[in-house]
Length: 215
Image 1 (spheres, one colour):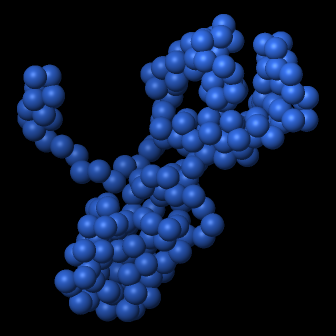
Image 2 (image 1 turned 180 degrees about the vertical axis):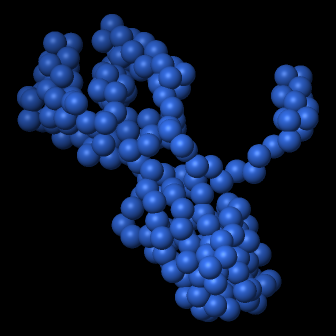
């Protein structure tokens, strides 16, 4: 498993070989920014299982949200509400829509929807008239600490694309490596037992949607 220091060393060597005039120490700070940018780009390739976080929180009466802590939430996966030992799956709704619905609903026994914002889980519409427990999973953003569990070449190539001059042989090689690496990940990466919060679409409806997309 590659560490951040391994990727940093590789990038420094490639930059110096390409004619970089800065010292290795000067390059290092730029590399950190480039690697973080590369990880942000990688967030959109697949749902990396290393970044899936489970949560269980209690939202108390008269409230509609609870903090999940200092975690950068990237994508919702699933949320369930437990009320008096009964469990209800909640549907995801964009926060602005949920807040708009809440504004016209004073209170509710248990919610139908959930949303994420500011590292908080929101439920609604309306404020709760009793305590509920919400549990489920969401995706956080990738961080440098995840590098040992990610494809080393993918991180390196994307970071190099941010550091090298476009059009140079080194930049073209990095772009080619990133393009092929991302394609391979999309085709082969699988998450065992992944949970999803989206509603299953009827086969006929899906067929109709695919036909319309082809037009």
